[in-house]
Length: 99
Image 1 (cartoon, rainbow, N blue to C red):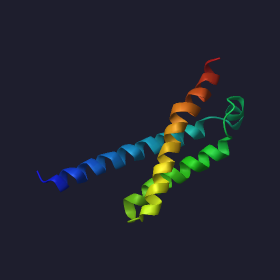
Image 2 (cartoon, rainbow, N blue to C red; image 1 turned 90 degrees about the vertical axis):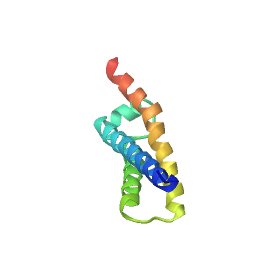
Image 3 (spheres, rainbow, N blue to C red; image 1 turned 180 degrees about the vertical axis):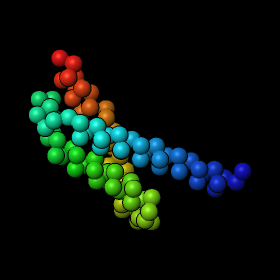
Image 4 (cartoon, helix red, strand yellow; image 1 turned 45 degrees about the vertical axis):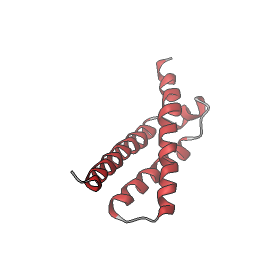
C-alpha cells in the first residue's frame, strides 16, 4: 500500500470522527434549556449553540470546498471548543438533571 493512500485514509477517518463529535456536541447543546446553562454557571445556551453550529458548518464546508489554511486553523479551534463542551459543559448540565 502506498504511503499517500494510507495517509488519505487516515485523514478521512479523522475527518469523519471530528464530524461525528461536532454533530453530537451541537445536538446535545440543543437539548438543555437556557436556564440549565445559567444554573450550571456556564456561558449561555445561545453562545454554545452558535459556537458549535459554526464548528459543524466549518467541518461540513471542508467536505465540499477546498478551504485555505486560515479556515483549517479556525476549524482546529472550533474542534477544541466542541471538546471543551463535551468534557466540561455537558457533564455540568447533566449533573443538574440528576439532582
